Length: 342
Image (cartoon, rainbow, N blue to C red; front, top):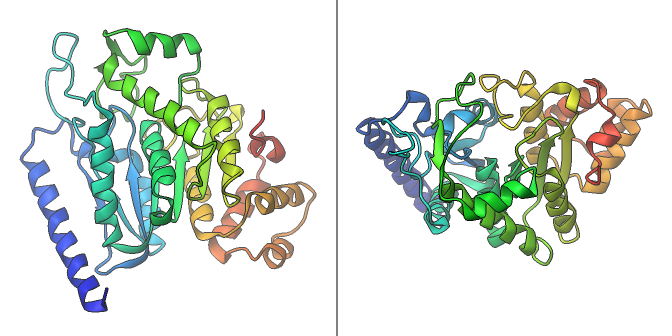
């Protein structure tokens, strides 16, 4: 593709994104925060980020991280997912219009992957919860098209196997226990079959990770997350690591009280900046998992940033922020935070 063709594609995509905003403005959205978020430079960038929000939520979840990557010099798109963000009197007798066929979501993310490719040279995908499950699927299905995948507490199963079993058989309407929590601009409830498809997708990616080569993955989880199954997240990471050595794992200590909705302060994560630091450091670094472990070990031993920078060839800004984060204990042992077997 020539430079001129690339410019035409970029301009066409910008016009398409304007149309997306226009069409969403004509919808009865539940809240302005639910609309798609696009953070764009007036040109194609070295990397472009495609972020996928969580189940029943909206693009607002990726606004802080999206702005951080935009300020880093990258284009960022956070599209509103099918059936999400609609205004309405949603309740048990009239549930929100969430898809019950996983192909609806898969076709959606594939379309946006193609759009992302016109906005930057390398594509970074990321997602929270079920958005993380979709990002994991993309990383496994299309590793050659994806530079990095950021999986923020992906939904690969609930914390309790009994809940998984109930999700597989019940057709009922369910309301979130924290439906009135701060920063919740999405739906307060849903019909179980709409979540069931993600449980099945999670099972599929766990199986695929055992044999397929994935794009490099950053797995971020939290001990204080009482929604998803952390051991399955660890299983996914360990399986993928056998094929892909440039993946990282980081688990926030329980003392930080970072729960499932970990992307923003609006959603009660007082340490929003830690999520951003991890994401930026992973995307801008070429460290392998072994090197990342070595970095944590040597920080615990008191090694300075200048020593590590030369030894591990750390990126100036991202590496320095990661070092600062890992030297401030925040009540946790670094070696436990990076241990995917705990």
